[in-house]
Amino acid sequence: MSYKRILLGCALVLVLALALSGCAAPAATQAPAPTTAPEATQAPEATQAPAAATGNDKLEVFSWWTSGGEAAALDSLFATFKTLSPATEIINATVAGGGGSAARGVLQTRLAGGDPPDTWQFHPGFELLGQYVAANYVEPITDLYASEKWNDVMPKGLVDLMTKDGQIYGVLAGVHRGNGLWYNKKLVEKAGVTVGATMTPDEFLAAAAKLKAAGITPLCVGDSGIWASAQLFENTLLGVIGPEKYAGLWDGSTSFADPDVKKAMETYGKMLAYQNDDHSALSWDQAVKKLMEGGCAFSSMGDWAYGEFVNAKMKDNVDFGWVSHPGTAGSFMIVADGFGLANKAPHPEQTKNWLRAIGSKAGQEAFNPLKGSIPARTDVDRAKFGVYHNWSMDSFAKDALVPSVVHGSAAPADFQQAFNDGVTSFVVDKNVDAFSAALVAAAKASGFGK
Ligand code: BGC
Image (cartoon, rainbow, N blue to C red; front, side, top):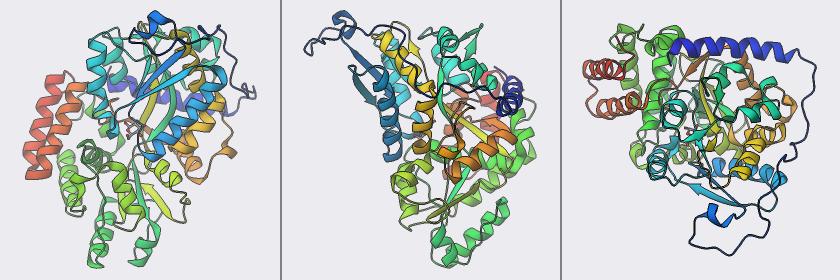
Protein backbone atom coordinates (compact mmCIF):
# COMPACT_ATOMS: atom_id res chain seq x y z
CA MET A 1 0.00 0.00 0.00
CA SER A 2 1.45 3.33 -0.95
CA TYR A 3 1.30 6.26 1.41
CA LYS A 4 -0.70 8.10 -1.25
CA ARG A 5 -3.48 5.62 -0.67
CA ILE A 6 -3.39 6.36 3.03
CA LEU A 7 -3.50 10.05 2.32
CA LEU A 8 -6.45 9.46 0.03
CA GLY A 9 -8.07 7.47 2.79
CA CYS A 10 -7.32 10.21 5.23
CA ALA A 11 -8.95 12.79 3.02
CA LEU A 12 -12.00 10.58 3.01
CA VAL A 13 -11.85 10.37 6.79
CA LEU A 14 -12.10 14.10 6.93
CA VAL A 15 -14.91 14.30 4.43
CA LEU A 16 -16.76 11.52 6.17
CA ALA A 17 -16.30 12.96 9.62
CA LEU A 18 -17.68 16.26 8.45
CA ALA A 19 -20.57 14.60 6.66
CA LEU A 20 -21.43 12.47 9.65
CA SER A 21 -21.24 15.32 12.12
CA GLY A 22 -24.15 16.89 10.28
CA CYS A 23 -26.05 13.63 10.04
CA ALA A 24 -29.09 13.37 12.28
CA ALA A 25 -29.57 9.62 12.20
CA PRO A 26 -29.14 8.37 15.75
CA ALA A 27 -27.00 5.31 16.28
CA ALA A 28 -27.95 2.43 18.48
CA THR A 29 -27.50 3.59 22.05
CA GLN A 30 -27.02 0.15 23.49
CA ALA A 31 -24.65 -2.60 22.58
CA PRO A 32 -26.45 -4.89 20.16
CA ALA A 33 -27.76 -8.20 21.34
CA PRO A 34 -25.87 -11.22 20.11
CA THR A 35 -27.37 -12.50 16.89
CA THR A 36 -26.04 -16.00 17.32
CA ALA A 37 -26.73 -18.59 19.94
CA PRO A 38 -23.96 -19.00 22.47
CA GLU A 39 -21.90 -22.11 22.35
CA ALA A 40 -22.35 -24.87 24.90
CA THR A 41 -23.29 -23.24 28.18
CA GLN A 42 -21.98 -26.04 30.36
CA ALA A 43 -18.26 -25.69 29.99
CA PRO A 44 -16.40 -28.88 30.81
CA GLU A 45 -13.62 -28.95 33.36
CA ALA A 46 -10.31 -27.58 32.13
CA THR A 47 -8.68 -30.14 29.95
CA GLN A 48 -5.55 -30.56 27.86
CA ALA A 49 -7.63 -31.04 24.71
CA PRO A 50 -7.81 -28.03 22.36
CA ALA A 51 -10.64 -25.69 23.26
CA ALA A 52 -12.34 -26.15 19.88
CA ALA A 53 -12.64 -29.87 20.41
CA THR A 54 -14.43 -29.47 23.75
CA GLY A 55 -16.81 -26.78 22.42
CA ASN A 56 -16.27 -24.83 25.60
CA ASP A 57 -17.42 -21.28 26.05
CA LYS A 58 -14.20 -19.28 26.03
CA LEU A 59 -12.57 -16.37 24.26
CA GLU A 60 -8.83 -15.78 24.05
CA VAL A 61 -7.88 -12.15 23.53
CA PHE A 62 -4.21 -11.45 22.79
CA SER A 63 -2.75 -7.98 23.34
CA TRP A 64 0.15 -6.03 24.84
CA TRP A 65 -2.07 -3.96 27.09
CA THR A 66 -0.39 -4.48 30.44
CA SER A 67 0.33 -1.00 31.86
CA GLY A 68 -2.08 0.33 34.49
CA GLY A 69 -4.04 2.48 32.06
CA GLU A 70 -4.01 -0.13 29.30
CA ALA A 71 -5.22 -2.92 31.59
CA ALA A 72 -8.04 -0.76 32.98
CA ALA A 73 -9.19 0.10 29.46
CA LEU A 74 -9.01 -3.54 28.36
CA ASP A 75 -11.13 -4.51 31.38
CA SER A 76 -13.80 -2.09 30.20
CA LEU A 77 -13.92 -3.89 26.84
CA PHE A 78 -14.25 -7.20 28.67
CA ALA A 79 -17.17 -5.74 30.64
CA THR A 80 -18.91 -4.68 27.42
CA PHE A 81 -18.26 -8.11 25.93
CA LYS A 82 -19.85 -9.71 29.02
CA THR A 83 -23.11 -7.93 28.22
CA LEU A 84 -23.19 -9.96 25.01
CA SER A 85 -21.62 -13.21 26.21
CA PRO A 86 -22.20 -13.37 29.98
CA ALA A 87 -21.15 -16.99 30.40
CA THR A 88 -17.98 -16.86 28.35
CA GLU A 89 -14.69 -17.30 30.16
CA ILE A 90 -12.18 -14.72 28.93
CA ILE A 91 -8.58 -15.77 28.55
CA ASN A 92 -6.62 -12.54 28.78
CA ALA A 93 -3.41 -13.38 26.93
CA THR A 94 -1.04 -10.45 27.26
CA VAL A 95 2.64 -10.08 26.52
CA ALA A 96 4.18 -7.01 28.17
CA GLY A 97 6.22 -4.61 26.08
CA GLY A 98 4.87 -1.31 24.79
CA GLY A 99 4.11 -0.95 21.12
CA GLY A 100 3.80 -4.74 20.89
CA SER A 101 7.59 -4.98 20.76
CA ALA A 102 7.59 -8.39 22.45
CA ALA A 103 4.01 -9.47 21.73
CA ARG A 104 4.23 -9.48 17.96
CA GLY A 105 7.03 -12.06 17.92
CA VAL A 106 5.16 -14.35 20.33
CA LEU A 107 2.05 -13.98 18.20
CA GLN A 108 3.89 -14.82 14.97
CA THR A 109 5.23 -18.02 16.55
CA ARG A 110 1.72 -19.04 17.58
CA LEU A 111 0.24 -18.19 14.19
CA ALA A 112 2.96 -20.00 12.29
CA GLY A 113 2.47 -23.01 14.58
CA GLY A 114 -1.28 -23.16 13.91
CA ASP A 115 -2.16 -22.13 17.49
CA PRO A 116 -3.92 -18.78 17.04
CA PRO A 117 -5.64 -16.88 19.81
CA ASP A 118 -9.24 -16.11 18.83
CA THR A 119 -8.43 -12.45 18.29
CA TRP A 120 -5.45 -10.15 18.68
CA GLN A 121 -4.50 -6.50 18.74
CA PHE A 122 -3.18 -5.05 15.50
CA HIS A 123 -2.46 -1.73 13.83
CA PRO A 124 -4.25 -1.08 10.54
CA GLY A 125 -2.26 -0.61 7.35
CA PHE A 126 0.86 -2.66 6.74
CA GLU A 127 0.81 -4.53 10.04
CA LEU A 128 -2.67 -6.00 9.51
CA LEU A 129 -2.59 -6.39 5.75
CA GLY A 130 1.06 -7.37 5.32
CA GLN A 131 1.55 -9.64 8.32
CA TYR A 132 -1.84 -11.21 8.98
CA VAL A 133 -4.13 -10.88 5.94
CA ALA A 134 -1.47 -11.78 3.36
CA ALA A 135 -0.56 -14.88 5.37
CA ASN A 136 -4.24 -15.87 5.63
CA TYR A 137 -4.20 -15.72 9.45
CA VAL A 138 -7.45 -13.74 9.68
CA GLU A 139 -10.99 -14.12 8.35
CA PRO A 140 -12.93 -11.25 6.78
CA ILE A 141 -15.59 -9.69 9.00
CA THR A 142 -17.31 -7.75 6.22
CA ASP A 143 -20.67 -9.29 7.23
CA LEU A 144 -20.35 -7.75 10.71
CA TYR A 145 -19.92 -4.32 9.15
CA ALA A 146 -23.29 -4.87 7.45
CA SER A 147 -25.16 -6.36 10.43
CA GLU A 148 -23.77 -3.83 12.94
CA LYS A 149 -24.16 -0.92 10.50
CA TRP A 150 -20.54 0.08 11.06
CA ASN A 151 -20.23 1.41 7.54
CA ASP A 152 -22.45 4.29 8.66
CA VAL A 153 -20.29 5.28 11.61
CA MET A 154 -16.70 4.18 10.96
CA PRO A 155 -14.62 6.59 8.83
CA LYS A 156 -14.07 5.02 5.43
CA GLY A 157 -10.44 6.14 5.34
CA LEU A 158 -9.71 4.04 8.43
CA VAL A 159 -11.76 1.06 7.23
CA ASP A 160 -9.80 1.19 3.96
CA LEU A 161 -6.63 0.52 5.96
CA MET A 162 -8.19 -2.82 7.00
CA THR A 163 -9.62 -3.76 3.60
CA LYS A 164 -8.21 -6.03 0.93
CA ASP A 165 -10.01 -7.09 -2.25
CA GLY A 166 -13.27 -5.67 -0.94
CA GLN A 167 -13.16 -7.63 2.33
CA ILE A 168 -12.74 -5.99 5.74
CA TYR A 169 -10.53 -7.70 8.30
CA GLY A 170 -10.83 -5.78 11.54
CA VAL A 171 -12.69 -3.32 13.71
CA LEU A 172 -11.03 -0.45 15.56
CA ALA A 173 -11.39 0.06 19.30
CA GLY A 174 -9.90 3.54 19.14
CA VAL A 175 -7.50 5.91 17.43
CA HIS A 176 -4.47 7.18 19.33
CA ARG A 177 -2.74 10.44 18.53
CA GLY A 178 0.93 9.47 18.52
CA ASN A 179 2.47 12.95 18.55
CA GLY A 180 1.89 14.19 22.09
CA LEU A 181 4.31 16.02 24.37
CA TRP A 182 3.16 15.60 27.97
CA TYR A 183 4.45 17.63 30.87
CA ASN A 184 4.38 17.95 34.61
CA LYS A 185 2.67 21.30 35.07
CA LYS A 186 4.05 22.15 38.48
CA LEU A 187 7.61 21.29 37.56
CA VAL A 188 7.54 23.30 34.37
CA GLU A 189 6.02 26.30 36.14
CA LYS A 190 8.60 26.01 38.93
CA ALA A 191 11.36 26.41 36.35
CA GLY A 192 9.63 29.44 34.84
CA VAL A 193 8.96 27.67 31.55
CA THR A 194 5.78 28.70 29.76
CA VAL A 195 4.19 26.19 27.42
CA GLY A 196 1.88 27.81 24.88
CA ALA A 197 -0.71 26.22 22.60
CA THR A 198 2.03 24.98 20.28
CA MET A 199 5.79 24.50 20.55
CA THR A 200 8.55 24.58 17.95
CA PRO A 201 11.64 22.37 18.20
CA ASP A 202 13.72 25.45 19.06
CA GLU A 203 11.29 26.45 21.79
CA PHE A 204 11.54 22.95 23.21
CA LEU A 205 15.34 23.04 23.22
CA ALA A 206 15.29 26.47 24.94
CA ALA A 207 12.85 25.17 27.56
CA ALA A 208 14.99 22.08 28.07
CA ALA A 209 18.10 24.19 28.63
CA LYS A 210 16.24 26.29 31.20
CA LEU A 211 14.96 23.20 33.02
CA LYS A 212 18.41 21.66 33.07
CA ALA A 213 19.86 24.86 34.51
CA ALA A 214 17.24 24.64 37.24
CA GLY A 215 18.40 21.11 38.06
CA ILE A 216 15.38 19.41 36.49
CA THR A 217 15.72 16.54 34.01
CA PRO A 218 13.96 17.98 30.93
CA LEU A 219 12.95 14.86 29.00
CA CYS A 220 11.69 11.50 30.23
CA VAL A 221 12.26 8.57 27.91
CA GLY A 222 11.59 4.92 28.74
CA ASP A 223 13.24 3.00 25.93
CA SER A 224 13.86 -0.38 27.48
CA GLY A 225 12.02 -1.17 24.24
CA ILE A 226 13.76 0.89 21.53
CA TRP A 227 10.41 1.73 19.90
CA ALA A 228 9.90 4.52 22.46
CA SER A 229 13.03 6.33 21.31
CA ALA A 230 12.12 5.53 17.70
CA GLN A 231 8.83 7.25 18.35
CA LEU A 232 10.65 10.30 19.73
CA PHE A 233 12.50 10.39 16.43
CA GLU A 234 9.39 9.72 14.33
CA ASN A 235 7.60 12.61 16.02
CA THR A 236 10.62 14.87 15.59
CA LEU A 237 10.87 13.89 11.92
CA LEU A 238 7.24 14.90 11.40
CA GLY A 239 7.83 18.10 13.38
CA VAL A 240 10.87 19.20 11.39
CA ILE A 241 9.95 18.15 7.83
CA GLY A 242 6.16 18.72 8.08
CA PRO A 243 3.29 16.42 7.06
CA GLU A 244 3.66 16.77 3.27
CA LYS A 245 7.29 15.70 3.18
CA TYR A 246 6.64 13.12 5.88
CA ALA A 247 3.89 11.63 3.68
CA GLY A 248 6.35 11.51 0.80
CA LEU A 249 8.73 9.29 2.77
CA TRP A 250 6.33 6.35 2.33
CA ASP A 251 5.97 6.52 -1.45
CA GLY A 252 9.58 7.47 -2.15
CA SER A 253 8.89 11.07 -3.16
CA THR A 254 10.82 12.25 -0.09
CA SER A 255 14.24 10.74 0.35
CA PHE A 256 15.67 9.83 3.73
CA ALA A 257 18.72 11.72 2.48
CA ASP A 258 16.71 14.95 2.16
CA PRO A 259 18.47 17.84 3.97
CA ASP A 260 15.36 18.38 6.10
CA VAL A 261 15.37 14.74 7.17
CA LYS A 262 19.00 15.18 8.22
CA LYS A 263 18.03 18.33 10.10
CA ALA A 264 15.38 16.29 11.93
CA MET A 265 18.04 13.76 12.87
CA GLU A 266 20.23 16.54 14.24
CA THR A 267 17.31 17.93 16.26
CA TYR A 268 16.57 14.45 17.61
CA GLY A 269 20.24 14.16 18.64
CA LYS A 270 19.98 17.48 20.50
CA MET A 271 16.86 16.29 22.30
CA LEU A 272 18.56 13.09 23.40
CA ALA A 273 21.12 15.17 25.25
CA TYR A 274 18.32 16.18 27.63
CA GLN A 275 16.92 12.73 28.40
CA ASN A 276 17.01 10.98 31.77
CA ASP A 277 20.12 8.90 32.54
CA ASP A 278 18.04 5.82 33.36
CA HIS A 279 16.06 5.88 30.09
CA SER A 280 17.14 2.42 28.93
CA ALA A 281 16.13 0.86 32.26
CA LEU A 282 12.57 2.18 32.06
CA SER A 283 9.51 1.13 30.11
CA TRP A 284 7.38 3.86 28.50
CA ASP A 285 4.88 3.83 31.36
CA GLN A 286 7.64 3.96 33.98
CA ALA A 287 8.92 7.06 32.21
CA VAL A 288 5.44 8.61 32.40
CA LYS A 289 5.29 7.70 36.10
CA LYS A 290 8.62 9.40 36.61
CA LEU A 291 7.17 12.53 35.01
CA MET A 292 4.11 12.36 37.29
CA GLU A 293 6.34 12.05 40.33
CA GLY A 294 8.42 15.07 39.37
CA GLY A 295 11.50 13.17 38.19
CA CYS A 296 11.46 14.91 34.81
CA ALA A 297 9.42 17.53 32.99
CA PHE A 298 8.41 16.39 29.46
CA SER A 299 7.71 13.10 27.71
CA SER A 300 6.98 12.58 24.01
CA MET A 301 4.49 9.76 23.75
CA GLY A 302 1.26 8.70 22.11
CA ASP A 303 -1.84 9.41 24.10
CA TRP A 304 -1.87 6.00 25.74
CA ALA A 305 0.16 8.13 28.21
CA TYR A 306 -3.14 9.87 28.94
CA GLY A 307 -4.47 6.51 30.17
CA GLU A 308 -1.69 6.47 32.77
CA PHE A 309 -2.65 9.94 34.01
CA VAL A 310 -6.30 8.88 34.25
CA ASN A 311 -5.34 5.69 36.05
CA ALA A 312 -3.34 7.76 38.56
CA LYS A 313 -6.38 10.04 39.00
CA MET A 314 -4.51 13.08 37.73
CA LYS A 315 -6.46 15.96 36.25
CA ASP A 316 -6.19 17.41 32.74
CA ASN A 317 -4.51 20.82 32.74
CA VAL A 318 -4.08 20.76 36.53
CA ASP A 319 -1.56 18.03 37.27
CA PHE A 320 -0.38 17.51 33.74
CA GLY A 321 -0.52 19.36 30.46
CA TRP A 322 0.11 18.52 26.81
CA VAL A 323 1.01 20.12 23.55
CA SER A 324 1.71 18.59 20.16
CA HIS A 325 5.23 17.21 19.93
CA PRO A 326 7.46 20.16 18.90
CA GLY A 327 6.68 21.26 15.35
CA THR A 328 3.77 18.83 14.84
CA ALA A 329 0.79 21.07 15.60
CA GLY A 330 -1.61 20.61 12.68
CA SER A 331 -0.81 16.91 12.29
CA PHE A 332 -2.39 13.84 13.85
CA MET A 333 -0.10 10.79 13.87
CA ILE A 334 -2.52 7.87 13.64
CA VAL A 335 -1.85 4.89 15.92
CA ALA A 336 -5.10 2.95 15.82
CA ASP A 337 -5.86 -0.32 17.61
CA GLY A 338 -7.95 -3.00 15.98
CA PHE A 339 -9.00 -6.62 16.51
CA GLY A 340 -10.05 -9.28 14.04
CA LEU A 341 -11.18 -12.88 13.79
CA ALA A 342 -8.52 -15.57 13.56
CA ASN A 343 -8.72 -17.99 10.69
CA LYS A 344 -9.77 -21.25 12.42
CA ALA A 345 -10.45 -19.34 15.63
CA PRO A 346 -11.16 -21.84 18.43
CA HIS A 347 -14.25 -19.82 19.45
CA PRO A 348 -15.58 -17.96 16.40
CA GLU A 349 -19.01 -17.06 17.77
CA GLN A 350 -17.60 -15.61 20.97
CA THR A 351 -15.02 -13.75 18.89
CA LYS A 352 -17.76 -12.18 16.79
CA ASN A 353 -19.41 -10.96 19.99
CA TRP A 354 -16.05 -9.56 21.09
CA LEU A 355 -15.82 -7.64 17.83
CA ARG A 356 -19.43 -6.46 18.21
CA ALA A 357 -18.57 -5.20 21.69
CA ILE A 358 -15.51 -3.33 20.45
CA GLY A 359 -17.39 -1.70 17.61
CA SER A 360 -20.44 -0.78 19.67
CA LYS A 361 -21.09 2.77 20.78
CA ALA A 362 -21.22 1.64 24.41
CA GLY A 363 -17.92 -0.19 24.08
CA GLN A 364 -16.16 2.76 22.48
CA GLU A 365 -17.54 5.23 25.02
CA ALA A 366 -16.35 3.05 27.90
CA PHE A 367 -12.93 2.12 26.54
CA ASN A 368 -11.54 5.31 25.05
CA PRO A 369 -11.79 7.67 28.05
CA LEU A 370 -9.60 5.18 29.93
CA LYS A 371 -7.23 4.41 27.07
CA GLY A 372 -6.54 7.95 25.85
CA SER A 373 -7.52 7.23 22.24
CA ILE A 374 -10.53 8.77 20.56
CA PRO A 375 -13.35 6.50 19.42
CA ALA A 376 -13.20 5.29 15.85
CA ARG A 377 -16.98 5.78 15.68
CA THR A 378 -18.05 9.26 14.70
CA ASP A 379 -21.41 9.15 16.53
CA VAL A 380 -20.22 9.11 20.15
CA ASP A 381 -21.44 11.56 22.75
CA ARG A 382 -18.64 14.11 23.09
CA ALA A 383 -19.95 15.19 26.48
CA LYS A 384 -18.82 11.82 27.81
CA PHE A 385 -15.22 12.80 27.06
CA GLY A 386 -12.94 15.21 28.88
CA VAL A 387 -10.78 18.13 27.83
CA TYR A 388 -7.98 16.14 26.28
CA HIS A 389 -10.24 13.87 24.24
CA ASN A 390 -12.21 16.79 22.85
CA TRP A 391 -8.94 18.47 21.89
CA SER A 392 -7.77 15.29 20.16
CA MET A 393 -11.13 14.82 18.38
CA ASP A 394 -10.82 18.36 17.02
CA SER A 395 -7.29 17.60 15.85
CA PHE A 396 -8.47 14.42 14.09
CA ALA A 397 -11.23 16.36 12.34
CA LYS A 398 -9.09 19.18 10.99
CA ASP A 399 -5.41 18.19 10.96
CA ALA A 400 -3.24 16.31 8.49
CA LEU A 401 -3.63 12.61 9.27
CA VAL A 402 -0.34 10.76 8.96
CA PRO A 403 0.60 7.14 9.62
CA SER A 404 3.15 5.89 12.14
CA VAL A 405 6.03 3.69 11.03
CA VAL A 406 6.94 2.77 14.61
CA HIS A 407 3.40 1.48 15.17
CA GLY A 408 3.18 -0.54 11.99
CA SER A 409 0.93 1.48 9.67
CA ALA A 410 3.23 3.46 7.37
CA ALA A 411 5.65 0.88 6.02
CA PRO A 412 6.26 -2.88 5.85
CA ALA A 413 7.67 -4.75 8.83
CA ASP A 414 11.19 -5.01 7.41
CA PHE A 415 11.44 -1.23 7.21
CA GLN A 416 9.93 -0.82 10.68
CA GLN A 417 12.70 -3.08 11.98
CA ALA A 418 15.38 -1.14 10.06
CA PHE A 419 13.99 2.11 11.46
CA ASN A 420 14.33 0.78 15.01
CA ASP A 421 17.83 -0.53 14.25
CA GLY A 422 18.85 2.85 12.81
CA VAL A 423 17.64 4.56 15.97
CA THR A 424 19.51 2.04 18.14
CA SER A 425 22.76 2.94 16.37
CA PHE A 426 22.09 6.67 16.28
CA VAL A 427 21.41 6.87 20.01
CA VAL A 428 24.99 5.69 20.50
CA ASP A 429 26.97 7.24 17.62
CA LYS A 430 24.85 10.33 16.70
CA ASN A 431 26.05 9.86 13.13
CA VAL A 432 23.51 11.65 10.93
CA ASP A 433 25.00 10.54 7.60
CA ALA A 434 25.10 6.89 8.62
CA PHE A 435 21.53 7.05 9.95
CA SER A 436 20.30 8.69 6.77
CA ALA A 437 22.14 6.19 4.54
CA ALA A 438 20.77 3.24 6.51
CA LEU A 439 17.19 4.46 6.05
CA VAL A 440 17.71 5.18 2.34
CA ALA A 441 18.97 1.62 1.85
CA ALA A 442 16.19 0.12 3.98
CA ALA A 443 13.47 2.03 2.08
CA LYS A 444 14.89 0.75 -1.22
CA ALA A 445 15.15 -2.81 0.07
CA SER A 446 11.58 -2.60 1.31
CA GLY A 447 10.41 -1.56 -2.14
CA PHE A 448 9.13 1.98 -1.63
CA GLY A 449 12.33 4.06 -1.53
CA LYS A 450 13.83 5.43 -4.73
C1 BGC B 1 -0.68 0.70 20.80
C2 BGC B 1 -1.32 1.29 22.04
C3 BGC B 1 -0.46 0.96 23.24
C4 BGC B 1 0.95 1.45 23.01
C5 BGC B 1 1.89 1.21 24.17
C6 BGC B 1 0.76 1.10 20.69
O1 BGC B 1 1.36 0.38 19.66
O2 BGC B 1 -1.36 1.10 19.64
O3 BGC B 1 -2.60 0.78 22.24
O4 BGC B 1 -1.02 1.51 24.41
O5 BGC B 1 1.46 0.79 21.89
O6 BGC B 1 1.90 -0.12 24.55
